[in-house]
Length: 232
Image (cartoon, rainbow, N blue to C red; front, side, top):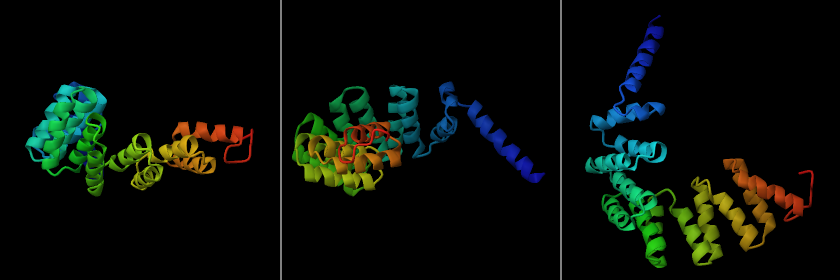
């Protein structure tokens, strides 16, 4: 009986949090009201998560900027990176993005260096500097840095051994797109269809990416890297 009452109490508590969300849009997301409440109470790290919710789910960029900045003001350097990300990828404002990525880097966020790598790569076309920033970011385990290095070496610098190296590192770090990118590199550029098939299979097994499944089917159909098998 006590256990039942405890469960009911917890349920009612969670229900009251959900119903008390100041922004009714957040009630559609399981963690939305709780994140809002913790952020309103002055928590240091939840504003970044709330900013992510507004950015990726609610699509309210002003609110995302507000909460990312609030997180930064409370000492979370990743909040400054979030501000830069909104300016760069969603508001088409690379100069404000640069400013906030620099602030994030100064605040010891590894993602700040990643953002500065993006700016050096895409805007400044300063590829040695981009590599330097990406490697700094990777050293501090920033998501996306190893994959960005693979992409830079493949598409811009045409250094395929280094592209393979960094894509493989990205894959070992759990980057979902890395195995698919390796499949495409081996198929389209290096014409090593056997290796391409291996990576497409890994991509589908690990991430269920249906583009990989398409290329596996195509390669069995055409006998590329494998004996032709129309049934497969």
